[in-house]
Amino acid sequence: MSMEEDPVKILKEMKKRSAAYKFLHWKASNKKKKMYFSMNIPVVVLSAITTAMTFYGISNSSESELALNCVLGTLDVIILAMSGVSTFTKYGQKSVGHKNSYMKFDKIIHKINKLLTNTSNINDNFEKILDKYGDTLQSSEELTERDMSALMNACEKQDLSIHDIVTMDIV
Image (cartoon, rainbow, N blue to C red):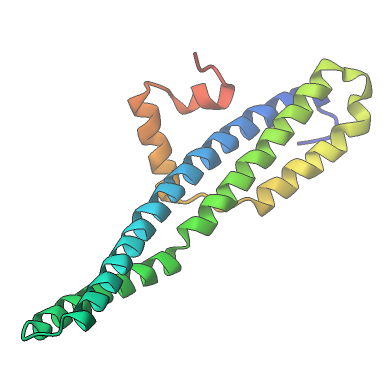
């Protein structure tokens, strides 16, 4: 973008792109949050079951102790594996990162709207918004190919095109 271009045109384009990024990060945040809960709720439930079974086994020792130990061991391995996957994928952290990103893009959209409604001080704030937009792009949570694929699926289900989202022509 050259500085000779009309700041209003640039701001309108930046608003469209910010809206698209906001939508992408919102979708990614929700997806990561669902993944986080789908990985961690079973871990909590299985841990509670394992703990209850351990206390039951201690109070009711019998010849079925081997079977109980096998079940407990299997549950412990499942819990360990699920906890490891959850820790490795960092869905909770990524969900929060995407949420922060879409909130930052939302703020940019509001600032641009404010500037576009009162263009008298557009030159004073134009550079600040450009800097904020650039910083937000640099610091945003990474959008993966999977996130983009989820966006495409969401668009197909709701009969939207990427153009509709970017231009905010959503009815």
